[in-house]
Amino acid sequence: MVECVPNFSEGRDLAKIDAIVKAIASVTGVLVLHQTSDADHNRSVITFAGLADGVEEAAFRAASTASAIIDLREHRGVHPRVGALDVLPFVPLEGTSLDECVEMAHRVGERIWGELRVPVYFYEAAARRAERKKLEDVRRGEFEGLLTACETEEAKRPDIGGPGLHPTAGAVIAGARKFLIAFNINLRTNDVSIAKEIARKVRASSGGLPAVKALGLALESRGLVQISMNLTDHEQTGLATVFEAVSKLAQERGVKIAESELIGLAPREAWEQATAAFLKLPTFDGQRIVENRIERLRRDQNPAL
Image (cartoon, rainbow, N blue to C red; front, side, top):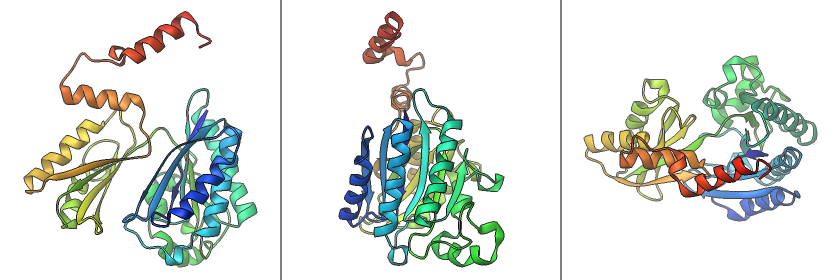
């Protein structure tokens, strides 16, 4: 089993997102688990899973549909982006390794360029260059900046295809990674400088919390600002730790939290950790959850289950 969590540069025209979802769901054996769209980000995230062959085919169909109906020349949103299908990560589930997901990312990337003529960058475990391991490093400059830079700078050129980007679909950034939790916290203020300052305080690259990436963004349609975060290793820094840190920093600046948002899905273990931390249960473990305990005993008694 493999999970795929593509991010698309469209969050306002839901008919376009529905077309992409239908393309994914058209592959036998692939399950669309979740979808979310945001108008301020102008971005959608679709989560699907299945056996490797089916997931590869669904990822390609998603890329094909997105490249045909999303025009980045007309796209505006607060979230950074390079492609119509912007990010295409493969995540190992049961019976699949990270190395196998790397091979999937490379195969799909080759097909996207070969059949759609949309160039591809690789990141995280699938990166072919050390300097492209981090997504933010690959995406720096975004569509508009890379559109011209990759024509003249070899270091900016895609790993497959190019040298220039596709004129309307940009480029796909494909990769393989472990579970990532996309978690946003919205603040009751329209001062985006506060969100940017808090994001800088909590993100790992600025000396903040381990395994946390963060951006401060304005949500103009809601009159709020957002700390948009990726938790790349919830065992190092969990949901409760991030929420507590942001809450404290916001309070110090006289700002209240309006709400938090989970984008896509998160593993059960992350919620168990967050609950235990919030309730201050130091001796808690997952086997104290009745459903987990039943599943464990069933497996012990019948490993085929």
